[in-house]
Image (cartoon, rainbow, N blue to C red; front, side, top):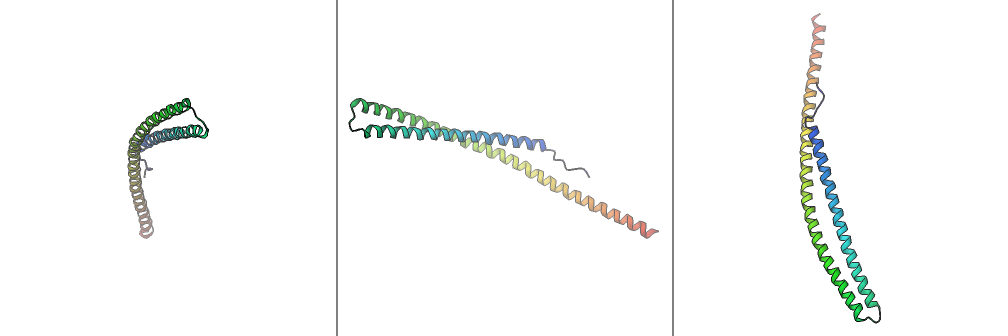
Length: 147
């Protein structure tokens, strides 16, 4: 009997490679989101540091308070921009998760088909070996008993 050959092996490898590419893209998006979150954390830290600097001094003048207010407004604007970017990134992550899930499903289906075909091939192989063994045994018995 012939050796087992899965005719869709190349397709399976292609789907596995596509799934890996989608997973890499997802990881890139997760990295992008971590960078956005780090930026948001940094902005919050800078704002708190500036406020504590001004409050920590005994006396503050109007120019320092105006500068602090301008900085707080800048940080607020940057935070709003960052939150929009964060939300957009989350949307891309959700879309990418769906793409990854789809590619993994395709791979899983092909792997299941391969394992089913391999099980069928093994069953046929075992049946053929059993048949050949029986035929061989019968032929031997006939040779020994016909003489």
